[in-house]
Length: 260
Image (cartoon, rainbow, N blue to C red):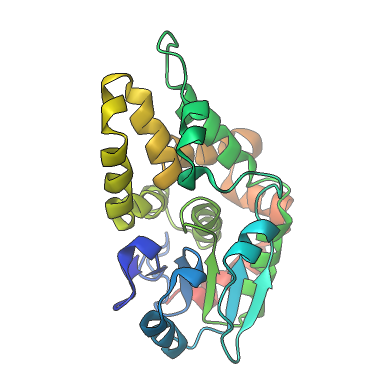
């Protein structure tokens, strides 16, 4: 919910604390963190990170991404890689302008196909996902403070945050707010990409959507994730039980520990 002072906002490094659960309690501050790749931290930021006392780091990136930009090693911290997406998904999209063109739909297309496709891919990640199952096991182990991250701290990390907030009883409005907050934190990077593609803006509004899908997040993503969960399972508790084996007593343990 709040940035970590001294760490650049574009790294999307923030504390998940402060959101209010349905029972009136709030997520504890200084316990759950989310961010982009830790290899992006400069030396001063790494010193600030070390002072947070984080004991567990969950890296949701692919093997290829981890090899290209490894996490720094932090003393006394358990660092685990558990890819939360398909290992063969290409991760260099934001660095390759050519791939932007592959994402664009024809001018004659009706509707926003990019938003639909991206949202469908993201929504699929909440089902049968071993990385998020492992995340919940670590949360139940209470080896905190805990940080989870991916390359940009917005998609796989954003989904991880959605799942945690659902388990803690946070309402949909706050979940949407947190997911879309990545656009605020990454605003300078989004604006830079928009300026670099400004000539194309006259061709199609879909170009802007494609840029937002790569550099930021789309409102359609979080909407589809939540809507599909309820369509499939009826309630979030039923979803968490069937997909993540979180029983009523597990949810109570999570809420009693992570809320105050």
